[in-house]
Image (tube, rainbow, N blue to C red; front, side, top):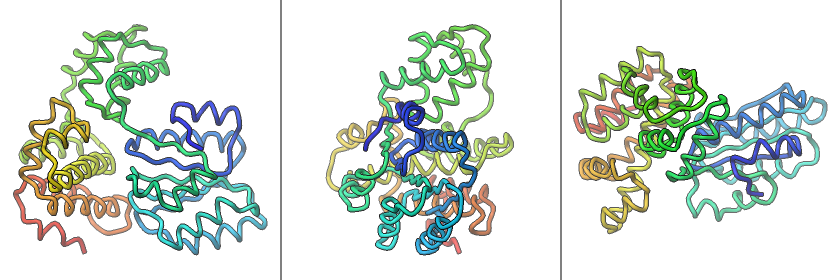
Length: 345
């Protein structure tokens, strides 16, 4: 059953926890917040145990199933989270997920999340299985009008109101990125004493902020400005920004560029590709230049390396995530051979 992301909390309040949930799509902030809503509901229902299986470091499906069967005999109710990330379940995984979703032997709640799924993935047996048995939430980027409404709802959480001009300035600044938008609104609401926030306050907050942010880093990488990108990433490190957030932001942009490069390779004109991927007008010039600088193969290598960085960040492999991020940036700028990038062992 498909449910809108903004209606999930209402459904949880009305019905309590249901048997299984499946959150997927292109907006990780919405996925994180949907998962958080389920976790809060679990706590309110005295569900104290939570187990997590992460596809980025590998899931042993049989161990998951065996553990579930053993616990179901005598254990208390649990929240079982399976984070597929960009990976799809294999044949064994599909079988295990089917058993978990349809099992009447346990009161455990299943929470599965995944990155964006293309039309082919949404026709698979395992996806259809989730549609039949789970509460499904598909997340997607919001267009400007919808984003402005979302910004206002976000401000209301802090008992604030954004003027139409303020929401327009913020939506133009973040260019559709909901994580950046959420951070912008939260900072403004915490800094403002007034109940209403206008465009002048937004512009003042922007101009007064001397710190670099993650999205400035992404832009510097896209345009190939290596010196600026390195300055920004080191500034972010000094500020204590988590490397996982930086790697996510870079990976999101590289994944989008990889998909656009594939569309170009298929013969689609640049204008069609930019429109198809909803690239904002202010970014079209340097997105086009990036696609001219990086081949599909190079972008695929960069994308694979972001997955490697993720394992380093999570401690599954040895290494310094900041060094790995800088190496990614250097390669994306065209300054270093891609042969070096692929040596991740």
